[in-house]
Length: 155
Image 1 (tube, rainbow, N blue to C red):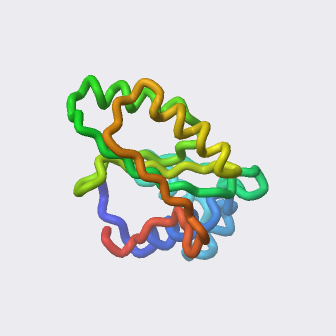
Image 2 (cartoon, rainbow, N blue to C red):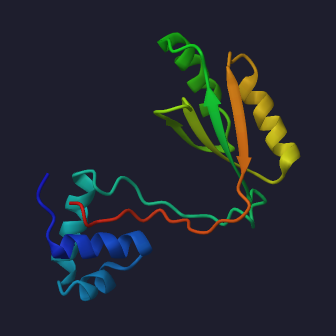
């Protein structure tokens, strides 16, 4: 992977704000002409720095405005157990993030649902067939910061 210069970083910052920005507008904002700008974007995609371009949807308007963080602890750490749990989690569309953690919690899930009753149904899907030691759910009371933009100062 090539080293990113100031133009690449500025392009990435702008694309993180609006992935649909027209190439001509992007080029103007980074002081390039359209063709070299387009080539740089293609290189960023080919290198894997830009993994994909997506639409960010409004959770509240889609009636999934309740965010639940689910901390899962297990007393089984075999690959067989993980494969079974992973299969169960990946089939639940309300689970939008899934992490293996260090520390007291083994796995952390971010779940989006319309209400507590809907979360209860998700909870039942998660525990069905999974041998879990402890499940702790925390409901987000207020979203204070949410972004998909990554910091670019470390490259």
